[in-house]
Image (cartoon, rainbow over all chains, first blue to last red; front, side, top):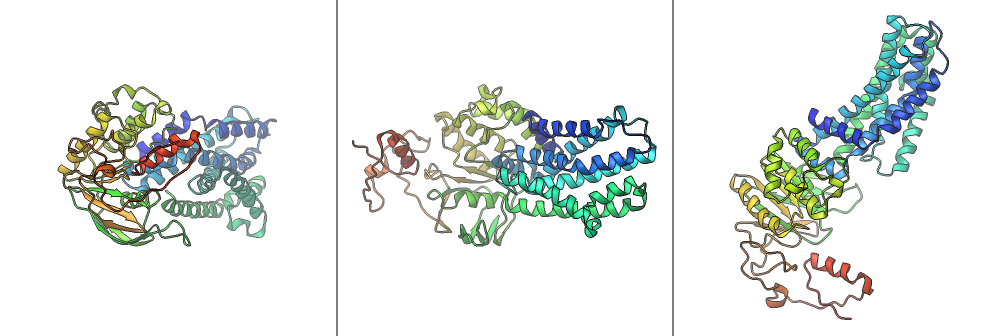
Length: 223
Length: 262
């Protein structure tokens, strides 16, 4: 599965599809950190970054999973030994790309963006929130990839619409039970992230697992 | 490997592509699957390969190592032939040297440094065959493998099929041109009307394309001219002159005899 994930990453890099989400990432980071974040506000900035970059993570995952032509996916299934390995290798490759992008999102403001170095606890909180953003974004990207939604126009609409729906639902009273993007932004801003990190992580990872399970089931019917 | 009461359709309300199919494949067997375009040959191959789960029924005892060569190899990938085959070798846990050896055997050594996107249909078909053979397959599935191949590779492919079956592998070949009709010991399945039935092709019959020669073929005459095996009728198809070549090629590819008049 590792070799197949490397093949998919290599195809993704060579196809230059990585440029689109990478340009989006750098533009969003440039906007987030156009003015220096004052000392003590680093975790709040990280929380906003992690929540808003879910869209970029989803875009990158979708692009990676769309790179292989449909017939090559069939060839890869036989080469890997069984269909599940091909599906797993695609998700592993998407996760790898998104973790790389999240590393840039966490690391760049340490070089330019924060007026002072954040406290270790705030840095750890920022990393945790970006990991949650990566997981939710990867699941959303997988569910809008070509094997699931064949039409590129429908796929992009569902990707942006799905992210907007996640944001809006997280504003409502049931937001903590969905992917709680707005609650984690508010909690970080109010300095209460430590208290809610566990339920927020549980809710995000639950929906990520549900999304990836649905993706895997749909892929078995649409290889 | 056994298919028990296998039925398949692509959507809940869609038509049945295959219905209550009951089949067995044995080690060392060579099976040719024929049928008209859209009959369900490729769907049957995808079920055999494990790409699709049956809507009803079950498929048991599928071997571990499956080689699959698609009818159209996907060339829109950003690799050279050598880089692509090296990736496929690593995924299969094999050595890139086997790809070079197979490329030599299928007259494709000169293609190794070419980008996949620059390959002609026949050359791409060879790369599809090579990747399917990188690890000795227990089950080799070839979807229209003869289409577009040069004569040397057409002659070599049956020998490769024979080697794999002799080593105990199962080989399933979809081929609407009936290229393996005279292959010794081959089993023939006909896919039609959502059913798969054994059938016996006319051993004297030859493919519509007169260039399709094989080592075991003795008769060089087109069967439709010399020995019609069933009642035949003549259907006139009137087309624009500019489309005549394309239509004639399609009909010949489907195994029909054509005569042109203007």
